[in-house]
Length: 76
View 1: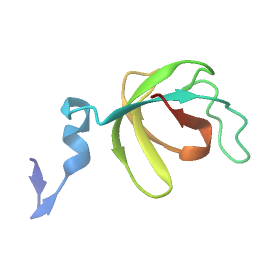
View 2: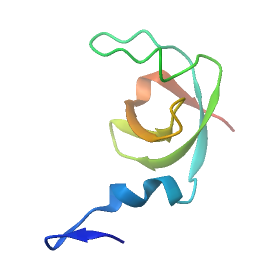
View 3: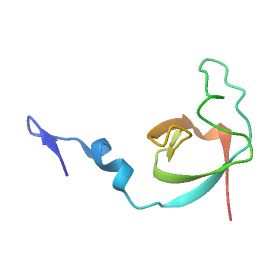
């Protein structure tokens, strides 16, 4: 785990983190943000981290990014 000035920077290691689950993108109709270039409807993505409001996935840029949960459904 990387620390900078005594602060733990866990997001620097997310690209190497264990996948916790998979989700499927169900839409890219964003109200405020442009997400259709980073997400593909129907594609499954690996989830690296999750909060109450966001899912952090490896998106189409092959980098970890956070998105609202409303764009996804769990793959069971």
